[in-house]
Structure formats: C-alpha cells, structure tokens
Length: 127
Image 1: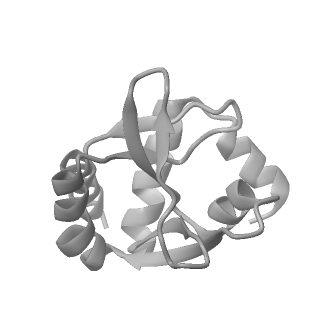
Image 2: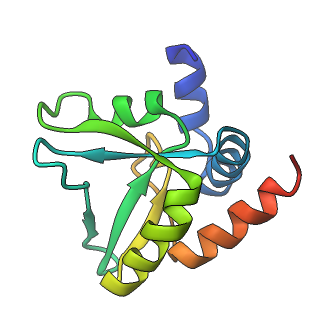
Image 3: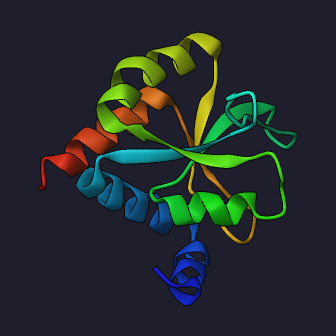
C-alpha cells in the first residue's frame, strides 16, 4: 500500500474507517497495535471524553505511520484468535475501550472491545 492509498483511507470519516478496518481485519485475521521498548502497549487517554483506549490498526503500514517520529514505538501484530481470547477480556477487565484506526484529523472510532469482537465476527462471516 503506497502513501497516497494510506492517506486516502486515513482521510475517510470515522464510520468509513471503521468499516474499512472490519473488512481488512476479517480478511487478514490480524490486528496491529503499538508497543514500546518494554513491550507495553500504547494506551491513549482522551481528555474530551475521559476515556482510555487502545488504538488499533488493520495493517502494519497504518501503525508505522502513526508511530512516525516516535523513537520508542513499534508495530506489533496480534492474531485475531489471540485478540478475541486474551485481549478482549483483558481490556474489559481494565476498563479500556478500543480506538479503531485513528484518522488524519485525529478523530477515532471508540468502541468496547466486546462490541468490536462481535462486529469482526460478523465481518468474518462474509469470507
């Protein structure tokens, strides 16, 4: 995927990016997150809504683009079975939401991990 394609997708509105995320992840069966040198995942606190969330991307290129300029963040792929089995319950237990594919305008679709799991399972039934 080239930079123009990435920019075009990141320029979509939140709902369109969410739909794109669902279809690509359903096909690839992998979610991308960012981790630091200590292997701790990136967690973002939204001042506007008082929400903490885990940002996720449908492909490594998106996560790399987001981390550009940050020396200590690197992309990490999480298989969908691992995400469903380990991450969804862990995020729920920790009270963390999921921020799906942050856009160029800094908007992000925030959802509960269990809702994202359901939406992904629905999307996977199309494949």
